[in-house]
Length: 266
Picture 1 (cartoon, rainbow, N blue to C red):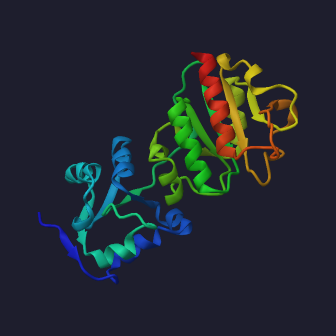
Picture 2: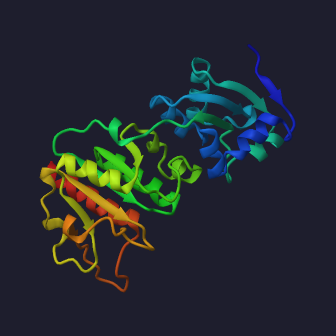
């Protein structure tokens, strides 16, 4: 079936898609946007449901973009071609892959996690910056963590900046969202030790035994962890700082802790 050609920026479907750049609209509609062939391909691999796709053929030059285009007919997406002028309205930042997808927001809950014995789980509580969330998800994927829980997040999981910074690893089924209270209850059920980096902690992070599993908790750079995480519940670990700064960016801290845990478990 020939694709519809959209030539007007005022097309209703184009305007509806652009609205999904807003977190409020994503929550209201239960939909979100995915830009770029690599991220769209990973969403397909993860079973994300596609509803619509917009293609600017003149810009589809990358092999990974064209690979995804070949797979789109096997999805439920209504595929439309757009002119370069319409693409200018649809695109995210400077991204010019020529492909944008509207997807149904998947349910991601704690009850869906399938964990091995003595798992490594990351908990991201109250992080405000979607780029940090995405970077940590990418690191968790690379290090091979068993799950990532976004607790009381201040940005939605499928913010375009999170998707891009995660390189599409946000779509993994072992990534979920939950309330902090619910997360604490589940961690108690799993009987996991809870660790967090604290600049003043006496124990160095390399001295902790991660081989029995752990929940690695990371809080907001501005506010830290909330009062729900009582001191007696958390094992504080320090990352030595030898310069002027007293702490690392939260995504850098995550990388240090994740890879140390994985190193020990090998």
